[in-house]
Image (cartoon, rainbow, N blue to C red; front, side, top):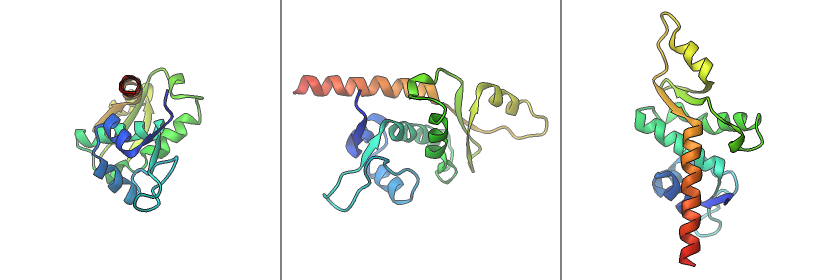
Length: 152
């Protein structure tokens, strides 16, 4: 499976517009980890699979109503999660990206249930299943690869 993606490919896979990706790079919300842009036409932005997953997760949180500023920690949280596993496929279930609109956390199913029942606490409002997002992205990557193979 492909390991790096140009900005147009990352845009196609994630559903996030190319101009949004450029903006997110500029404001340090999410920068490509493989190769950053170095000026017009010189070096294209290259995103890893983890970067594209972060793009998908940030977009899902934004669609749910979370503010972009509160999602800045998403790439770092995914990197921490990957410190525990060799690949994204090693993560089987129970990992959720959760935001209250001002900050973002990565919680297990058990932690999420504990937060939901704390008396007098406002529960976090925006929740995205990391594993579900990865499975869908992986399927989309394979489909993109098949389409390119047929076109060649």
